[in-house]
Image (cartoon, helix red, strand yellow):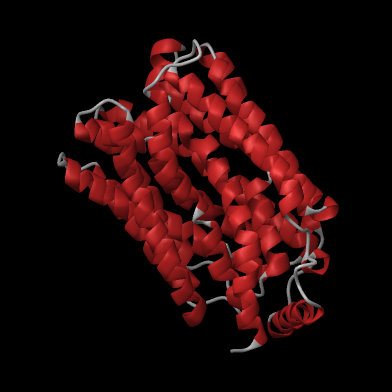
Length: 422
């Protein structure tokens, strides 16, 4: 086994537990609003359309600060900036416990997006500092465990918390407080757990640091990176094309995520609680399995683009099928296909921009792609609610999301490539 192959498991063991902890808490605080949907309607006077808009306005705040946040991270270092992001989003997430009426709900969700802006693309950029191209698909795939783990473990936790009032608060308020403050504590821990770059890591030997230096130099030799200025990068047609691909994928992903507990609850004929929480975790368990197996295969074959396009198509098909059956078993099985396909699509996607961009251009480009792509999270719940209202049928919203996935799959298959990207 060559030195780099021996080194990658060591990097995984030292970096991934912390990065996964961060993403699990991030996604838990981003998506737990789905479990509070009924409570917000009954106790805070927030109707269906207001809930859809409030859940999605998170992504507008996120987009506003995404690129500036990633540029700051590139300048000041990942450790301090990611810790700041976590601490602030945790406090704002906890504040969701005290919303009353649509206006305060909109305001807190918008602020939550601003607080979390830069986290995800910041970690993607951070991974490019540590993992050479030959291991990057697997590293991003491992990081993507965070979302399905958050929803596999967090769904039963959120369901349990929502079902039990305490401390003079409704269950949904307790859920926001506990899960938000956990993120702030995690942010404090990041200050002690992460190093900015391999050169700063005392747990790497001089030989191991040189192995990484040589591997990154080889990446540069095989596929010279674009290192143009920030503003030129933001206008680059290839970067803008990737924004469109990710936007369509995120419409499918968040159209699934925000409504999955309610959809499972309806299919099972049960109110949201521990049982629905456990059933809602099954699709995300399927996503974990997919992210474990497929990225390794794609790294060996170099076919991230083709497989990603196929998985986005499969995710859309799962969404459509989940709306065309009344059987609880078939609904959950279809949602398993959707969750696995959409989560894997996004994991494989990030091998494309990281192969095209480097340095400050990577910070700006990844930030822009994630900002515009995540606006799909704003469109998805509002599109779903609008189509359901227009046609008077809950299946219409799911079919609209599936159509977005079909278009995204076609764009994905034709995404820009260079010599190192399949």
